Image: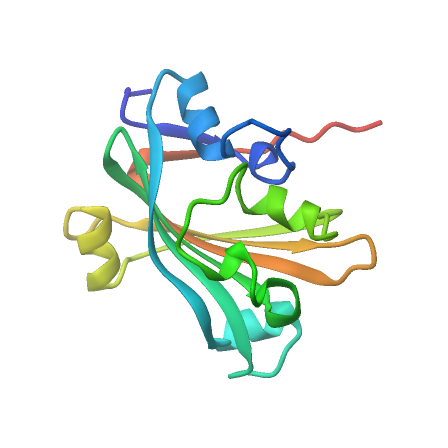
Length: 180
């Protein structure tokens, strides 16, 4: 595996952080001897796109809160992530703003009483659109992975949906499942 390939597991991003801990991405990158950072490209209320509306179980076009981020690894684009929240959870909170959230969004959600209990991830591969290709600095013809992660609470209510786009040739997704 080359030094530029990133091995990603989901668990650190699903667990609220302890008081004083930084966000999961920075900690995960540092544990692998790398530097993880992110830029908030946009945050606020938007009409729910079709796929987001379906998984959040709201009407298409109903307002939702989105945080759109460019995720960087060693100052290079590693991922585009748009995270959507139901308006009743995120309106008026740090999730709707561009400021860094201490401990990350999952930690803030937990403080607000919304803890994930079930996560569903769907991964597909395809070609990026021109905007994605430029933002991720991929070569023409280079595919991307698209990961959609839905987080549900204990009552199976959707609390968050992440839509990620990652350069396929720079990623390795790892799923660890503990039985019992």
